[in-house]
Length: 100
Image 1: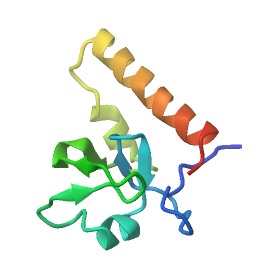
Image 2 (image 1 turned 30 degrees about the vertical axis):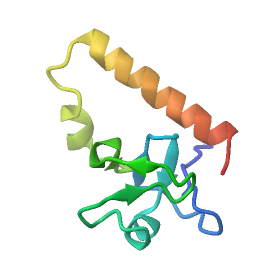
Image 3 (image 1 turned 90 degrees about the vertical axis):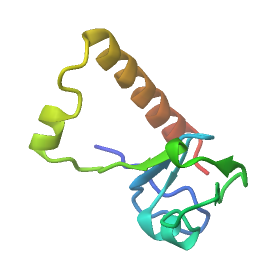
């Protein structure tokens, strides 16, 4: 059974599409829009109220296409690919064991 990341904004729980890595939070697009993540900033994390730079969050597809999966890490060294995979697994593990 595959588990999905859910929005960390209380009372939402929708599938998350935007990841906020400042404090390992995940937001759905609706909550991101409601909290001003589509504007020019400044940005504030809706969970912990910490200021965020635009480089600290991004939109992440939860069901990427085969094409996206084929090119996402293309050209990177195996060491960088493994580092990315490790960070992704850490984020996933944190989300699964520390629900907001």
